[in-house]
Length: 546
Ligand SMILES: Cc1cc2nc3c(=O)[nH]c(=O)nc-3n(C[C@H](O)[C@H](O)[C@H](O)COP(=O)(O)OP(=O)(O)OC[C@H]3O[C@@H](n4cnc5c(N)ncnc54)[C@H](O)[C@@H]3O)c2cc1C
Ligand SMILES: *[C@@H]1O[C@H](CO)[C@@H](O)[C@H](O)[C@H]1NC(C)=O
Ligand SMILES: *[C@@H]1O[C@H](CO)[C@@H](O)[C@H](O)[C@H]1NC(C)=O
Ligand SMILES: *[C@@H]1O[C@H](CO)[C@@H](O)[C@H](O)[C@H]1NC(C)=O
Ligand SMILES: *[C@@H]1O[C@H](CO)[C@@H](O)[C@H](O)[C@H]1NC(C)=O
Ligand SMILES: *[C@@H]1O[C@H](CO)[C@@H](O)[C@H](O)[C@H]1NC(C)=O
Image (cartoon, rainbow, N blue to C red):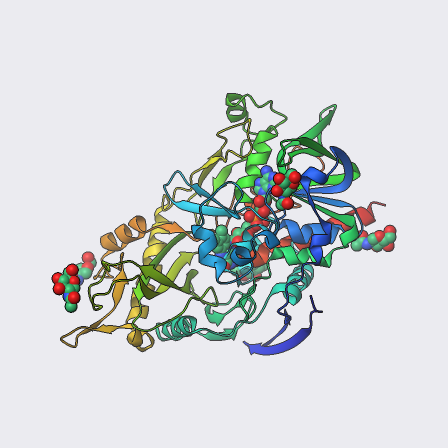
């Protein structure tokens, strides 16, 4: 639990000086555990200035910021990271946490979209930042222009740095990311932007919330930057609904009902001038608004939820950036790697490498290894493709209004908009071009006759990259999730430019549900920045109103 040292690194890009102050300490900082309480140990009724539902990627920096001057309660349905050190605190756990069976308490909750895609979401203090790939890259300029939030760019910069000096590291490049870096540049994804946290067209190495010892420093460690004596974090605290008080036509949030693991209901109430903030994620926040009677009346009525505030777009515009990838079996030991490098094209296709070591039991799927008896360890190199946006979207609807643990249904309608399909084709053509580069030569196997080629784990790209129909079929048949799903509480529809829920008072949403497009190549940097940014703005507004 040592101190964090700052180092200032200067890089020149496009004649600009980028000053980075990144984290350097590789020690976990568990100070936040002093503020963590089992919900069963909390009173059945208590008051706070602010109540934040969801101790996730956006919720933790927000809680830390508000705690500087006010009492804050965070309600998190999951447990704390020290309960699963191997799974959520190390690079070695990245694959395991995704594959672990969901017993209702494990840190990755599984769900399947109505499109048939298997997805996960975080259920642990620190949220999805504790189960993700760790890649950290800031938002694109278009995001600031089109997010519907009024940005003070100096404050944005400060908020990013507040995050970065604590939990963001410059990674030592591993073998596979460095090969992909070369392949991207050879395939024309230029310029080479070196190491940068900025969203820049070209090829770059970006930051990571994993340090170079493989330790994860998720959003949970941002709690340490708050005033811990003002902060109470309840774990295994399932928020069930927002409590509203109505005076005349005014609908105001006044608290939250949550249930502990013994099944007891608690009421947390807010003091005068306090607020309730939903940071339960793109699935959790729209679900909670609906359960609380904020949403489209026909849907609420069909579930016998009394309508508190009609809001037709709660749960609408749910989007998930399609991911398509190719997986190559590598003729040498490669070792696992998580996000370090990204190629950003002029059309905002994003190409990212990951690698893993997979065990196969015989009979092997390939037939070019000598016969053996035990499981076979294979290095698998993956090139992932996604693109900004997307334009296609669907909706989220309640399944149960009685039990918050029964998740909603969600449909993303991947590739419903033909422009999305065309962008996938473009991105996968680029991946095809990367396979033709010198950098990729060393991944080829030689067969008995001396002919060289890649060994793909199915599916491989169509042979004819110019053929639209087969490329489109590839995109559709191999689509999966990059886990950047967002929407459901869009700015301009469900919340205003200050992220307040329209038609209500004392209620905001601060998480990925507010996005009409996923920011940057990967969203967590922006989510953490927004938690800090909105928190500071709330403190300033309150000071100004005094
Ligand atoms: C497997 C995976 C890999 C990813 N890889 C990357 C990556 O490398 N880089 C990147 O930038 N992004 C990545 N992402 C995406 C990124 O992690 C998420 O977009 C981001 O963390 C979402 O933040 P959020 O604040 O919206 O929600 P979350 O961080 O998910 O937080 C929501 C919190 O609310 C809690 N909650 C929900 N409902 C309730 C309730 N009723 N009561 C109490 N608590 C509740 C949840 O338990 C959770 O802790 C990945 C995501 C996943 C799942
Ligand atoms: C919280 O307390 C309950 C009841 O004692 C217990 O069953 C549960 O395991 C505790 N949770 C944690 C995370 O310690
Ligand atoms: C963002 O808006 C500014 C000001 O209107 C404009 O100059 C800039 O080109 C826009 N950037 C993008 C990426 O849309
Ligand atoms: C390898 O396995 C195949 C199929 O089981 C078998 O026919 C063959 O004889 C085996 N070869 C060796 C060298 O063991
Ligand atoms: C590849 O597809 C294009 C477009 O369908 C077609 O014109 C071309 O002949 C195909 N090339 C080969 C080698 O089949
Ligand atoms: C916190 O409170 C102190 C004392 O009331 C005040 O001086 C200060 O400006 C406040 N800070 C913020 C960020 O609200």
